[in-house]
Amino acid sequence: MLEKLPRPTDARVLLGLGDDAGVYLLRDDLALVQTVDFFTPIVNEPRAFGAIAAANSLSDIYAMGATPLTGLNIVAFPQKGPPGMEVLSQILAGGYDKAAEAGLQIIGGHTVDDREPKYGLAVTGLIDPRELLAKKGARPGDLVILTKPIGTGILATALKAEMDPPGTEPLLIETCSFLNDKAAAVARRVAAHAVTDVTGFGLVVHFHELLGASGLGGELWLDQVPVLPGVAACLEMGLIPAGTYANRDYAYQWMQIDAAISDDLLLLANDAQTSGGLLMAVAPERAEEARLALREAGVASPAIVGRILDRPGPLLLKPGR
Image (tube, rainbow, N blue to C red):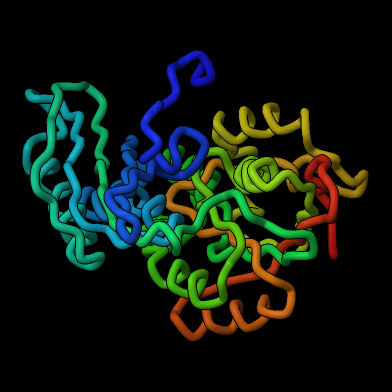
């Protein structure tokens, strides 16, 4: 559908629909980075949902290597009836909490009357375009690092069904509200060749997008991918979101799947994430440096999960390295 829309004609538009955020050149050493995201609650605690939504909205800014500057609230909420204005106040407070942590100034917003609550932000950041991170740029032999564990979509589905393992909601809140700023700083420090963030399309699709932008193939080593506690039990109970099935079905066309990979593992690799980690292609001689730097920065479970091949091709899903 997006292919049918007119493309920007202004040469100052450096990146548009094909990347994590739009980038507009102001001068040789300064560009605007803009993105927008909002969604329905994935946890029960309103303030935590606001913080998660804000962290998710900021993620694309960090994936580009930019510094967040200003934000606009985007709110859909029922004007009358449950859940009530106090809940909305708590959602917004959570958003402001996370914005303050990120140094983001919320300067306005827009609200619509909607039966189903939704919240997020339109975020503007700044970057020197010479330091821009993007999906394009991965090189043959690069190792690929993932900075957060996957499985948030599956756990959120279990929580909604009230079939979640003990501790699921605090785990989701901790994971999804954790900013990607520290991961982005490490990506810049080790001169990552390509970066994207892992969100609703899941790990496989976002890896594929990085490969497609770079014109190369790659391998994903599923035994190296960090997974949140409790996800395996939820998979056994069939607690899988519709978006995860849709991601898998969409990805079949360009995945090459090892016969040893189970259906559950394939679904997990395609699980729709909320406020997931960064996926970065790093020169092999700097990959371990990057992983250790991420750990030192407080990123809990960074892992080397794949590599970039020296030719175009599908994404090879392998059980191990």
